[in-house]
Length: 54
Ligand SMILES: [Zn+2]
Image 1 (cartoon, rainbow, N blue to C red):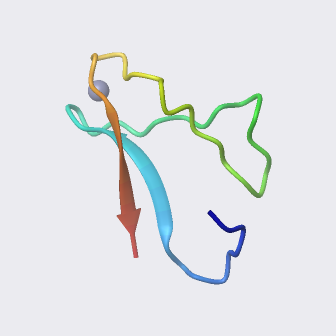
Image 2 (cartoon, helix red, strand yellow; image 1 turned 120 degrees about the vertical axis):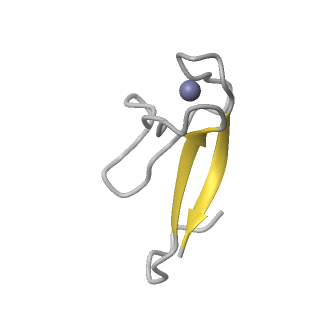
Image 3 (tube, protein in one colour; image 1 turned 90 degrees about the horizontal axis):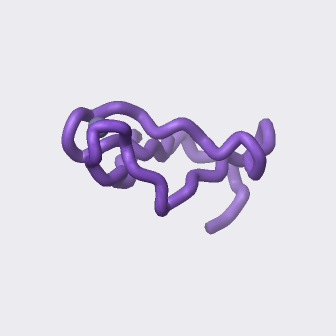
């Protein structure tokens, strides 16, 4: 992954079951770079999947 932010592509992680957005890891994230814990599960039990918005 790069840190380039010129593109307007936004990447979100959403629950595949209920569509809820995953919150970034507060300990690892910075203002410029959001870190998501890929092992985290949604409270409904669903898995978070990457969703790309252009
Ligand atoms: Zn969910």
